Length: 268
Image (cartoon, rainbow, N blue to C red; front, side):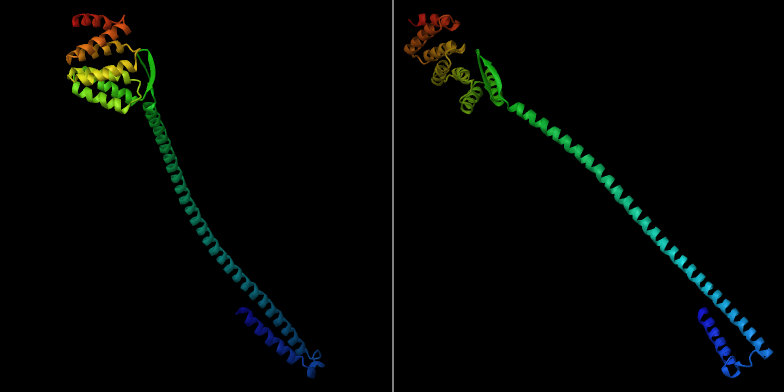
């Protein structure tokens, strides 16, 4: 607005000057003192108007510059606010990441602990499943841990004089482990339990199988003597005599052979 008013005044003054300096009066312009004064006055007014224009322009430029600075400040404040918001968001994100890393570290630690426990559990189970070396009557063999456990349990029943339960336990054991290194000994103790329950026929069968299955066992002479006793209980004297003769012949130095000789003498 200031520039437009100054331009209007300047243009009006120039128009007045042109009218004054028109060709019709130009020749006598400088002969007239009043005309010269008018020109000087006009020149001063033009200069004044020009200064006013310059001042108005500077004022306008100053106002525009101030507004520009204000606009820049507003934009800067907005930028700073946006930057602060971004920084806060980054802090939140960083905090979440730190929390996630801490949780991840805890999870990893827990997984490692479980892995160690699982590995230990597997090792324990493997040790329980690993075959155990057994030395029986000078004979070494490997047996399943459960096999050893079940044999010992059946033998414990026999030692407690629970002959019926011991009989069934040894029958189950021999069926479950037909190739067991305990086979001949299991047959011997099964026959002993059956003898105690007066199941002499079954006892005879198992005593014979025990002696035939492992003739070098320390229980073989005892199996033959127990077999002869079972035969005598059944009044089968002929079979008992033959069994005792085999005992004395095969194991002459055994304690069972000494007892067999005494019983054989009583049969005659």
